[in-house]
Length: 383
Image (tube, rainbow, N blue to C red):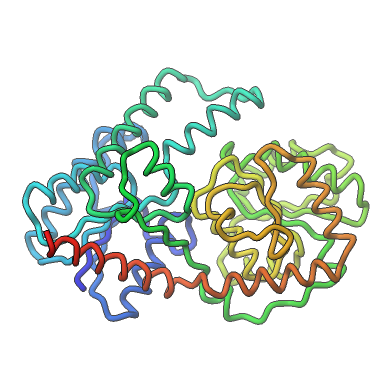
């Protein structure tokens, strides 16, 4: 197949959504497909305000680049990330192009906004300097999602709850939405896993940016309770060094000596960090793919996470990990304390988590995407 894939991001393999696109592209190429990609630097960014750029500029830029590339190559598939691809999708439909147009969502913006608004109120955290502008932009994003659903031939999402939302709230038809879970980097699956032991089990870990959507206040409540009740426990958080002071301020001074803050690092170093910890703590208010959680499972950590996004697809309660309701910090802490106190059970869960992750390779992700492309092409030919 000849496939055009675009995203408004830098092609960094270590970042979130962009890393997903990079890994998928490489896996598609390994299967023998021709992949033509365009990125942030191929798109104009005259509007510096990011939300206004997404609203006013990005749809037209996506359309412009797709039209240019399509004039040079007869693609089978055009796949763009983010709902702002709707204008390119509509243009592809109106021009009667042979290529099927696929929109890829890494985490549905309107679902995230709904959750964030609720938790801003519950936690008393201001939404920003201009809440009226945020509300206006949320409305625009919902309309763009409606449009990208209408004009795309198909959509790829990383979690079942996102597919359900698109069907229930945006008029998507089930056969046009594919749930394709994100992969785990190959080194995470290839490198031997360090066996779970009592020392590793007492060490908690979180890998994720410091932002409101990750529920840092709720996570800190759980971790603090564990540290206070188990004097041998410790906690590490991998996030941008620029946020370390804010993260440390979430914890009482009495436990600071057992809270380690680490900057972002390359995947090889990150594997070593995972392997020196036993329990992965994650309390996001909303997630799409939840890649850090699946990485932790691949390295045999016992995952204790809020029930969000793809975590709910992967975790079987008390078999290969644990989920708690968003906001239930106390139950999360109790689960961590219980896990630390029962090494044999933790070993069983660690082994099961590792087995779950084996099927989450980027090769499997690409294979499922190709199957979906072929279904869409077959449907196009019949009509």
